[in-house]
Image 1 (cartoon, rainbow, N blue to C red):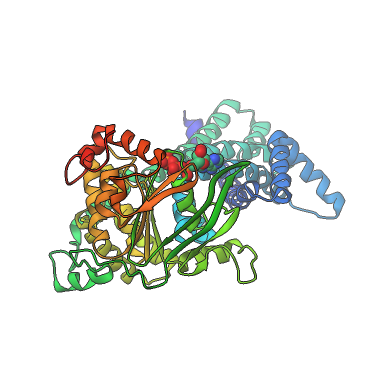
Image 2 (cartoon, rainbow, N blue to C red):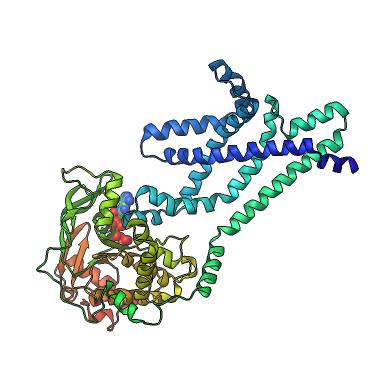
Length: 531
Ligand SMILES: Nc1ncnc2c1ncn2[C@@H]1O[C@H](COP(=O)(O)OP(=O)(O)OP(=O)(O)O)[C@@H](O)[C@H]1O
């Protein structure tokens, strides 16, 4: 025991631990930095980039680390590059780490929901901003456990450096043993040192997991909210009513300003997925201040048509104009490159609300609402926060600003989604079936929020399966069937469908009792013909 304790505190072995830690920390850091680049390149759409990177990862992961170490130590001098044993070992370990970290990071990025990335793209986040503010923070949180494992594995792998003469812990233990033959105390002491270092790493991993967990962030946000009250916006100060004029609530809906140029124009739009045409020549305009509701069966193309507004899906023929301009096309008719396309989306002043909310899960309600002013419009922090708070008040969620999405009901999450769209001060709001992912009892609060917004005179294009709601909110109903507009007109067309397809659609919808119960002014059957 005395011998064991003697070696456990033996400076020669402790210095070996420092070499182990230096090798581990430096190669992991290098592996993470290069691995991030490799992860992004391996997911690149360009095969010239992705295939070589995939091949590199395949080869590095498939060869023994010891062989890589010996190869680098012996082959590099033949090319005229002489590295110390430590540098050779560090290079070999780092190369190995790049491949493993690339795959770990790629897995983390893949774990971030696609909906969030689509939402950020729709709002005009540039690719680097999307990566830094949405994808990486969530990916890193997801990979902490795997990364902890990787760090511990790497700590042990540093012992391989002993074969090229790096004087790390294993080599130092062997040196002592070869001189005094005290195998047991020396090897037990060095093993205990490895275990102590691994334990520190495991605690570090646990701390990081805790620190970056969503529930921990929720606790911190709640504590912050308790410390600093919500501020002057709460309680209906005059500042609030002034600020709410971002979207002034006039109580009753202003008539559409049809004399002005339309905000949205769909001109003979066609969209195909692979060989299947799903939008087949749609002509539609949405005037300023108009609320247009798209109705149609599931699969009729409502979401696809809405996605064309922000160029989230390619248009095969025709054009879509927002405020008179195409989003994805340059003046010379060429397609905009990604950076310019993101700026074009941001400049379009379109706010979008998604079927599945697509909230940024690592951000509080306030941060979600701040995201567009802050990361897309470059508005300073204080003003972005102010705008976001105003938007949260508009959707009736001022008391929930510091809640994380997972602490909100579906209806509240969707209202945060609406606040996020509003905080960018859009000219047009697009709602893609905003209530279809909600339990029936939560639909009312979201519909009421949309109705209130509609009464302010903001331009809206919305798709819904809820005919009663469409009738109560829209100036114009548009019926889409198999990618074509079959009928459109005032909500009165709901009482008097012309085409058999629209009649059949309305009868089918009228049979759904939950749809009828959602209609604010009575049963849906009052509105639609029952044949
Ligand atoms: N990414 C895609 N790849 C291939 N086909 C797709 C894709 N997205 C949609 N489609 C197809 O395009 C058609 C229109 O889909 P879309 O989602 O626009 O309909 P929708 O009217 O919004 O339906 P729902 O009311 O169920 O949301 C459907 O046949 C659908 O299967």
